[in-house]
Image (cartoon, rainbow, N blue to C red; front, side, top):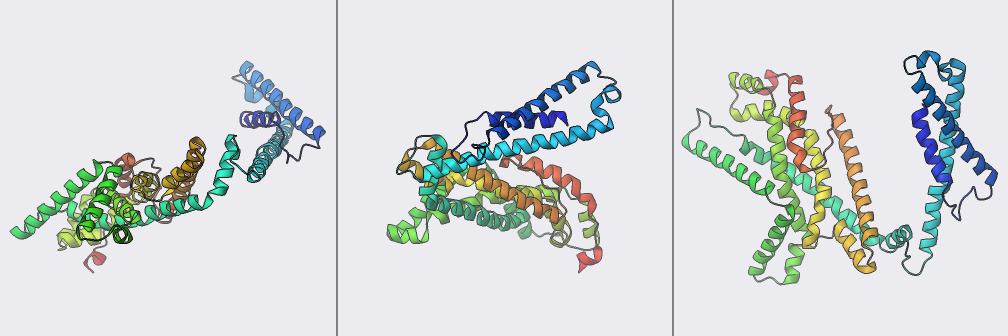
Length: 390
């Protein structure tokens, strides 16, 4: 109780030492502010006494300390509530009202203010349309790119996991081997090259092919826009990662499931589609859904081909006001908010499917995440043979 509340008390003391804003509601209540300050200081002194007593009576503190006696415990608890209330009051007065005061002053300016926070408020107010367009483009690229990649990954993972069966003829064996080779090469190339390079290759290759047909630049732009090229880039890039995630989830399924299905007369395709794949895709759901979070951040590199995403919008505002640090700080906060909202929705979705959500910071964590999640879920499934046959 003393430790955590003491931290809050120290924060409250720090707030009380800050300058009051023009909108401070404690400006006319000096006596109340002095009381809050000394109340918090008194709690810090009380916490120091409790700490000294605990150090002196380390072994028998629970039996000896007066702060553990029942009447005093109740008093201390109520005093701790007062500390939280005092800190919250000072936070609202100094931080919230201070921010509102800065915002009001910045909006009334005719030119960009010089201080950091006022400049951010001024630029966001004057350029909110540009920033909003960039946010919508980033969200659209990430959501639709992830959905398209999921469909493509399902198709590719079927090629990737094919194995030669004894009943296969030469043609089937050839196509299976070619499919596995194609999936391996695709995964290696895409995962081994940066998305920025992929985006530039895809955009300029498409532009060059359409230009070779005799189309004008304006006609090409109507068909092959930077948004379309960016969507293709994200979709193809995420397909490689999601394919490997699905493969890890499928391979984590107990091999006995597939063997039991084959022993009942199901073909390799029937066993995969009706028995193995439903279990594997559920194992891989946490890592698959986290690909959306990765795409929200990684879509920023597509600004190099002119995609009007959040990063491109930020660069546009920087070019207008020449305030780099302020605007990139705004972009960082917006990206953080987008990823936090996406993570929250994905966590709800995973819990709805009875799957434990896994935090992910980058695509390099994908394989380890799949291994952890997939390894815990396969034993929960049982083979329903009647369903498999039907």
